[in-house]
Amino acid sequence: DGGITQSPKYLFRKEGQNVTLSCEQNLNHDAMYWYRQDPGQGLRLIYYSQIVNDFQKGDIAEGYSVSREKKESFPLTVTSAQKNPTAFYLCASSHPGTGILDGNQPQHFGDGTRLSIL
Amino acid sequence: GENVEQHPSTLSVQEGDSAVIKCTYSDSASNYFPWYKQELGKGSQLIIDIRSNVGEKKDQRIAVTLNKTAKHFSLHITETQPEDSAVYFCAAKVERNGTASKLTFGTGTRLQVTL
Image (cartoon, rainbow over all chains, first blue to last red; front, side, top):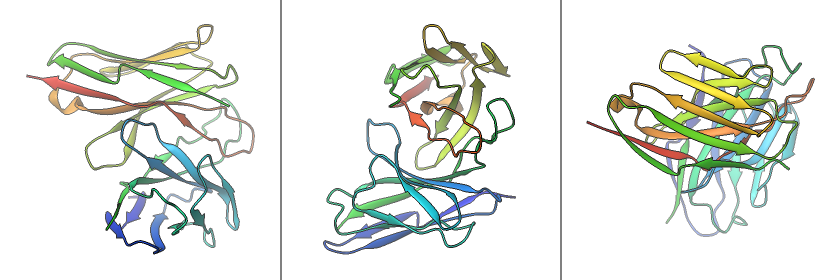
């Protein structure tokens, strides 16, 4: 079955350390996204990528970096510059929109990675 | 940019009763409105969506209504069951040709179905 796989499920970061969250999809989707979820808040977009070797900042990109070297993979690095990294991180994918009323695929989400600070 | 407000933040209903969650959006260009269900420790799952060319969509016990004039849309769950207990998120976006769409999410509603 196709889907999105995020790993690890739980991750701990030390002060000054960079950590990388993995996201892999076998849905043949062109577009991939990273969201951050904090208690009492909606999902906030960190970065998104419409196609391989291209990515754009979302609403809260500071302190994060991404790469999109392969269609299937969109890893997120939480850098030491991100001062409040504790959150639940969700990766998603979709086909880019090709028309308002066509079968544009809604975003599919992975199971998430919970990042905490040691 | 788009702003989505969601109410209530928590909702408790008895098994068998109906539950209604409401969202309002600010960008009149928004034309796609999905609803996601998030169970504890899991990622979100799309449960139903609606596009601006229709006013209502139903899938078994779940329905979504859209009022474009008032810029609000609602999730209706009938005959609720304990497994409906979860956090529900609404979202809105503008679908455009050839462009990956950015969703704007509401703040979520924690639904508790009691026996």
